[in-house]
Length: 540
Ligand code: AMP
Image 1 (tube, rainbow, N blue to C red):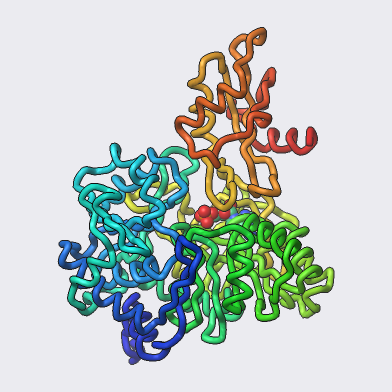
Image 2 (cartoon, protein in one colour):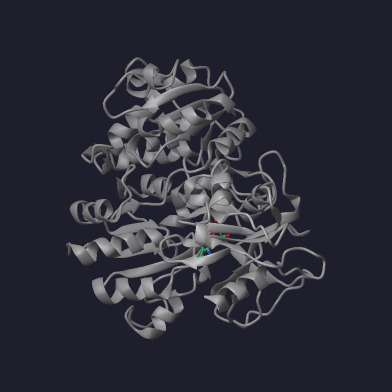
């Protein structure tokens, strides 16, 4: 017998309808490029979303088309988050930190037909222009309405476009239709696109609103520092629209002082970002004390939250860090540990111990750990294996179908992270199987570094791995075996060569290029990254 409940479609437009009617005067604050604050509210955002749906349609956007954004966190980006799926199209958030070559590759792979670009990011787009499809139409997001056409030839100005467009209702879509697309680094080869559905987006927003997940609520003032181009800003924009939380968007100004002043000035209660960000804010607060009395929690994820960071925030500023784990493929929130989840006070050493782990899977997500033969490992907090997950907001495939190897035969997603799980269901990430380096929240492919290095004259072999770094979370170290030991390549010249293919933040420091006699190999002749990391730790 079937249940007799409504088959209510879980679509992004439902979030807009709710914000428009239930929280029209709730504020959305964005930092402009000149540092001033722009204030609007969900009612005004919803009205502009209607116009934007009309504008997209007048530009020929149809159901299933991909529309790219190349932008920081702002009210305009929020409007695009809501209007592109509202027009039945797919919002493709392009990572602005990638090198031009990769941006062009991703845009071509996604088949984007339109791209919305922040004025401050136009130079990065200009650099990628020769490799971008010539038919790509640009729209420039500008605080001051300067000529868009001068920025990128043929570009439209966002504000002028909205002003000249008529509002249009959201297009009826199936909840399983695609709503968003976000690329993540592939361990081998090219980036992979994660294609979110309306349904997964809305369910994930509900998930983020749960107190045992991120706890976004109408009582919250949320500051997503994690970019809207990286893993959907951890779902915070959608969850804020759903719950009516005040939203504070930091724009392009992500320094410690700028963020600390936003937290104080806007009464932020819940902030989220990678560990390096919270180190910067910590340093700013040590220089200039601020009123943090409203700040209830900081969600730290994207990389392991170091114990020292958790302790400094707790004991110097009385702010408790919630440690979270997730991935682009998991929408991204997967697990978290809240202060007090042990039953102990947040400043008790036992509670801090617990928060060094990203903790229990959030409600809705299931986890298991598998050994190399695919057998389940016990949840004893000791046995470590590959973390696998499943749930309604976990990817079932990649855009274009690449990557079947990351799913188990029974459909679980293999995360590439190595973890233990204890008897109380707390996950601890102990290592990474995938061969990637994560610096300030963004990926560097060690294989791409190696291949580029091995193309440099005088390099016989090169292997890259991560070393821990306080400012970057992880930094790449490149081991190089010279073709001729008597004449090793110059590390400085090698880094200059790499700079032609990688963004500056992806490069190893000159002193992290280490000339060695040999690189450790596994039994099958591959670079033994585990042994390399161990060697690095013991050499300091
Ligand atoms: P991304 O898809 O870019 O969000 O990256 C996801 C990956 O970041 C995970 O698979 C982990 O390797 C890493 N990561 C995220 N959160 C944590 C955490 N709390 N501890 C350790 N690694 C993490």
